[in-house]
Each structure stands twice: as C-alpha cells, then as structure tokens.
Amino acid sequence: MTNGKKALITGIEGFTGQYMAAELSAAGYVVYGFGSSPARESSNYIQVNLTNAEQVKQAIDAVQPDVVVHLAAIAFVAHSDPKIFYDVNLWGTRNLLQALAESTKTPEAVLIASSANVYGNNTPGKLAETTPTRPANDYAVSKLAMEFMAGLFYGTLPIIITRPFNYTGVGQAENFLIPKIVKHFRERKEIIKLGNIDVWRDFSDVRDVVKSYLTLLKSSSFGTVVNVASGKMYSLHEVIVLCKELTGHDIRIEVNPQFVRPNEIKELCGDITLLNNITGNDSPKIPLRDTLKWMLEAKK
Image (cartoon, rainbow, N blue to C red; front, side, top):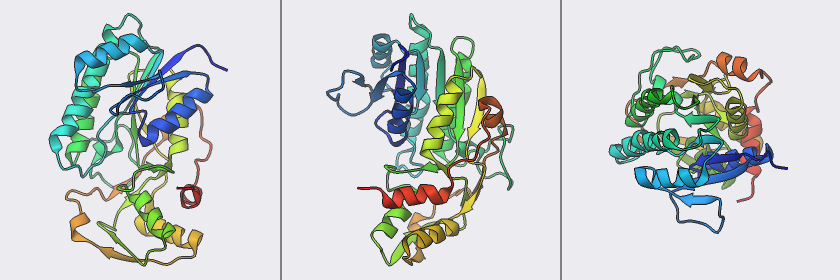
C-alpha cells in the first residue's frame, strides 16, 4: 500500500541504495532512483551523471520527489584518483541541491549521507557530532567540504546530514574490509592478507542504518548533522575470532605493506546520543555476530 509520495534515492544501485529502496518501499513510498549505469527497464530509474548540472536538473524536474536520500558518492577511500572525490562528492551534491532548490516542488526532507571519516584521527573514545573534525584523506575532506556546502542551502531546503560510521551486510563490495574477511572464511582460505590490523571500528548492520535514515527523514530535524552508528567498537582481531567461531575455520593473518594506508584512522566509535534523541529509539542494534552470520550464510 502506497502513501502517494515519491522517494528519490541517488546511488540506488549501490550497496546501501538497494536496502534503502526496500525500506522506503515498505513504508509506502514510490521509489525512484538515480544511478550512473545505463537505464534499466524500470521507468522509475534514470541514468544521471551528477557532475552534469543540466542532466541533474532535468531528472529532478521529471521526478519531483517528496523525499530525497542522497547516497551517491565515491566511497572507496583508497581510490586512485583524488580529483573524483571532489567532482562527485562535492560538486555532484551541489548540482543536486541546486536542482532541488530551483524545482517547482520543494521536497519535505533531504537526507545527505556524509561520513564519520570527517573526524579523522581523534582522541580515543566515542565521537559526538561536536567533536572537532580532522579529515585525514581526500575522501573525508570531500565529505566535510560537502557538509559545509550543503549548509548554504539550509534556508531553502529541509536538509539532514548523516555521518555514518562503518557498516556492512550482504552485497557490500569485497574491496571493503568485512566482506573481504567473510569471503576468505566462506572459501575456507588458509591465509588472509590485510593492511593495518591494529584498528578498531564501530560496525553497524546496513539494515539498522537504513531504518535510522527513514526515521530521520520523518523527524523534521532539519539543519542537523547526526551520527549513525552502533555505539560499540570492535577490533579487527575480534572480527576474525567471530568468523572463526561461526565457521569453525581457522585462518592465518599476514600483513601486506601494500595494503597499509597512510593516515589510517586507528579508532572510530560513534556517540549515538543525538540519534537516539531524534529518533526516540534506543533499542539494541543488530549485534555484529548476527551480521557476520547473515553474511557468511548468504547465497552468492
């Protein structure tokens, strides 16, 4: 049953986009998507190059969405071309916001996904939205610049900015850490080659993340920057141990210097007090063990 409203997801073909589409559809929205791949048979999908302002404007005018979830981004931190981070993450977002601002229909809510990477190498402990930002790579700098740029539209658009910490789930690309580890255990490999192993991360389940996004869209907390996280941190070793327990398979870790990133952020854990206050939901998140079990047992 639909609610008669249209939801637009940029980056709908991506890992998060697919789960966000299912969440919005279940909530009654008619879901439209922008993506970079050639148009599919679905009339609700439009191929759009976000760096082309005219293309973006035409697509927005065609859809006239009630709510927008902006997920499209270059998200792989180790991407070889730094310029593309700024072209897509900063200018692509500006083109989208400009088109929404000029549209004859102002959306009810626009959620923009930034990143917890903007905090950089901060002091240990849980990071709140008030923690000073110290981006340590081009991806993080592009996301922080995007946040500041989006602030220029606060007066004309109902914008909420999220800073998601690490999250994972079935379907995430294998160049990300958790899917890489899961793949090695599924294939019962003897060795896994990793980069920095002395890292701690706040890992959420993608299903929790999209639920939070939907609740934030309905919250009317415009002009707000909010962490989306689990509030719990795991070491890389703990992830390996959980996979061992779930599969009964042991694996040897080898550090490959080529995988060691400069300016690697050692610890990232989110303070989700603001998120819980806005959403009114402080119920437990899906445990990492359950997420890993889901991923390990998923059909390819």
